[in-house]
Length: 110
Image 1 (spheres, rainbow, N blue to C red):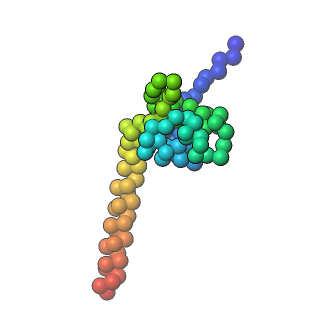
Image 2: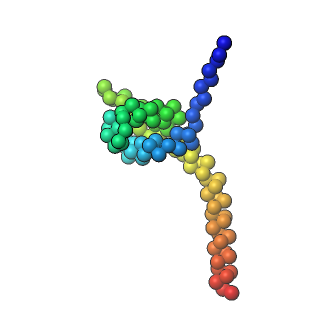
């Protein structure tokens, strides 16, 4: 018997694709229907639906039914996960910049 395991994508895999990042940017401004989102791309509606499915699986976007339409909106708390992960690197970068500033000031005064 062959058991197929389904790996759940993580948020970083979801944002790795430029089209998905563009979709995120679109719906960050306002909730949109799949057709309205697709109108912004030179690709098929099916391709946009696939990207939306991945974003939904990763809980970056949520589906909000309104009448006969489904609107996609951004889940801001998921974006905060990315920000928290990046925060550890921000501190390292800031330390490096501060060291560089100190070195440049030292060189400047000599």
